[in-house]
Length: 323
Image (spheres, rainbow, N blue to C red):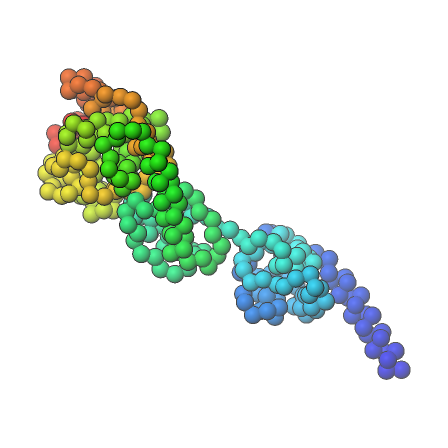
């Protein structure tokens, strides 16, 4: 009699579990859930509180009955609407965890990159401000909980790789003595123009000036110095900024500044290593978002006058482009 009752209960339980296996779950829309360490019970509690599953007992029983299919992993997973327990277990056992993304855009300073990493909610731990120009601008994917230092380490390794490639592929007879020189020049090019097609031309102007011993007179280097390395000024460059005695003030010092002023992208690295074939020594904004280039002072002066004619308010004399 006892065995008959027990057998009947077991059959009933089995039928109930079978119904629970592929029964649509309560989740109304796709949702990412962090499944903690601690085994099936911890996973079930998290899934229940997040509204992914309805019955903890059914989930734990079915997880145990199908344990040969694999272990339940602790990570952040994305669950679709109405996911059944069968769906949920398959995701926990075989799906890729949710990948988050952080994009380091071209031209950010080291301080800005550190702030960007600290704002990445899915990453963990503190991060120190890296050496200027050491992180390659691009999008990095990471799983929740990855340390910010680890993400930064990937960005620094990527920059090392791209810088080495740009240096290896550089044109002959450049007035650059090391990969660091190329990185510094690329960072200036990055901040000088947002137009991809102009970067090799801007690089050529600065390289021509280096060959001739002329001052670079690069406004972005002055802005870097005046902003304390943040790369963001709350005013237009003025006479005080240009007169500042600072190693990064290329209106005062000849040659390259002592270090990069931002993190340049791959295009700027390549432009610095393989510039346009040009004898130009000057450039100025052309009023359309690009620049007008010139070989002589006379031609440059005409370009400056033309640029000033496009401005509603003439710039302060100290900020007048004399590059």
